[in-house]
Image 1 (cartoon, rainbow, N blue to C red):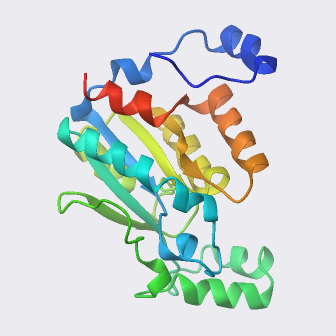
Image 2: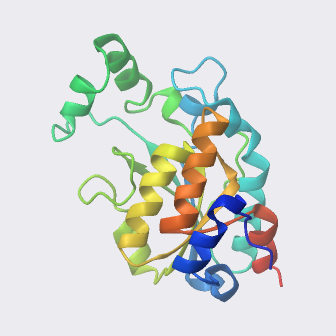
Image 3: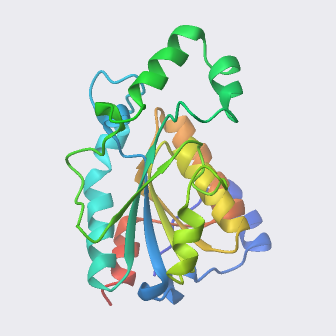
Length: 225
């Protein structure tokens, strides 16, 4: 299997640190979950507050991974970035990292029952799939998302990460998942963010430190062999 190719500048460091990795090749579909991160109207809708145009371009790849894993007996879960007005612990983010106008707009956009909170219509969502809300960037912050507990109850060991934004919620979720002991596969061409610079930096960081990076073709092939 052809893994994602690093820039030659980093290849030697990767080989020295990681050596050959086989997380995807060795993954059991029955203990594998595809986590589709925050593919919501609030990121994909033209004109949305947090519109991320490249995220619309990776929908076919996300759907292909989900279809292949479902057919092989694996799990698919979609996260939604949400604002919970009753949660006070993360109030500093809305007060200090966003200006007042942006803070108010973001709270409204991702509040309960908001249109932008909903998943994008172009996604292939099966009735068996899970939809899990999270109020932080990572899906593994205890008390703000039940993802870890859900995965543990189902015996999941391997996670495939796709979605948006590559350098924020996908990155944060993958980092925490790796540190919880999951085998993490990061889908390079099924993640999207605002710019190529941010995309490339995030994927590189994943490859060097936190995940096995692969392309959709390789992921689909791993579960249809």
